[in-house]
Image 1: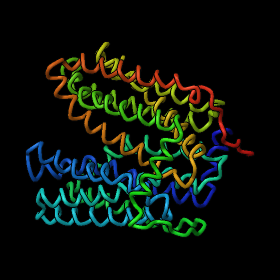
Image 2 (image 1 turned 45 degrees about the horizontal axis):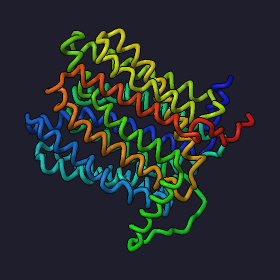
Image 3 (image 1 turned 90 degrees about the vertical axis):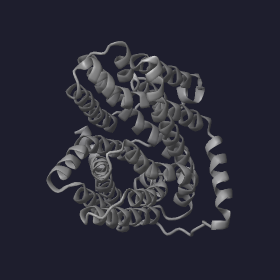
Image 4 (image 1 turned 180 degrees about the vertical axis):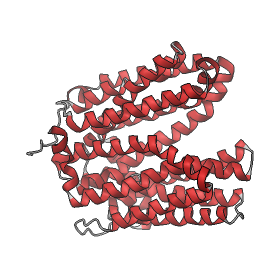
Length: 409
């Protein structure tokens, strides 16, 4: 009964349309992870080529994320997101046409992925604000929990769908399917009806608007402290993604063990999404950080107890903790940050997290070559625990009560 009541948020027309848009977009993102890799490898056997194409999407996102936050605060958010989706639909459709036609070259994929990254830089910071725009305050946690559950499910099903697409139709058609998901998302966003707002965006004021976002971000100590810690934690967590397959190959029996570990994390994430739909802690920030302590457990286990069963069990617990943290953190942002600054504050979170994570991906392999994979994994986990533990020094994080109204039914 409690879970059924929490799902009532889907009866809200605007949120239901936003959820449908996100469903299409997120599943498409997970499908293309596999398809893009095989598309590049079909053109070039060079790992450097694959890295270049992936970087072409990531770098513009990081560089232009703060401007994307300005757009999300000063323009109608559904219009910003819809425009981003249409641009990404076009870039992926052109890429699919080139691949299916057998005329694609690496430089073309790099250029198209750069366009994709630019559009994503406008899309991502607007998400938090769109949740707040489409849901009444007492339903924010359920809305965020549903979106977290959607992401977890997509991470399990998306790569499988992508692999099947590549196997049956080839990577070009798989990317065409991804393009269609952006078009579907744009159509649902177009149907969202929000109160009219007057645009305050002016190109000549963009840097002063970015600076205003920085002031808004820095004015709330619990926000910037958690964002700073999350950014470094994401950098250190790169050790799990890079060293997990290596340690699995060397000590756990190979790819099957790594697949079990990833599936365990995905299963835990789904459970965490369900938990966060029904659990309303009195002190959400304190509870969120306590749950975040569980996140580094798998990389710690890889370094200290390299056993498939131990690492998989820790991955389940980690997935639960991360999804509960994400839901409580997103809800706290949406209730604790001024609506006119929400996309800009979110943009700092996205930019810091993505930028340092990219740095971590570059450093982990180099460190593992000199210090050993197990040592680096253990150091990564311990470093994350210390950083997360330091958040409890903040009195605001420890004691700030929930300000979200309780649903009446």
